Image 1 (tube, one colour):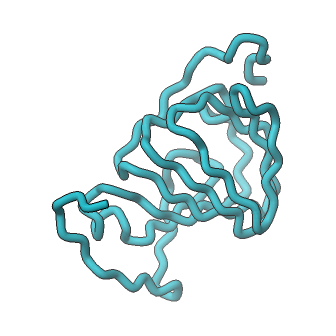
Image 2 (image 1 turned 90 degrees about the horizontal axis):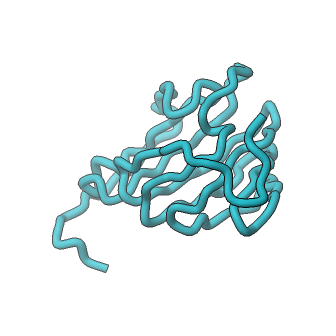
Length: 139
């Protein structure tokens, strides 16, 4: 696929990593430089649990307004519920390719949960939605 835009080569060094707040208060995010290198076509970041226990919107049913979302578990585990797919527990070495706009919610995650996530476009939006028919509301 060619976007017609030039992308930059990057080498993101782990020793120089900066962990920042992001979408969820219970996680820290390490941007891998892909957003800038692809002119916003993709974002790649590592997301890790930070020990906070604050409930947030992502534990409610929500969607991500994106064309592509890939999640690879680096450590720990998490259980999500997906509309039409049921509950899925992902563990170290597992991955999920979420179809665009699929309603889902997080049910639980381990204290050592860490994932690599790649999303397109980089500036995707997250929006809370009503539970799918037959699904329970978030607790």
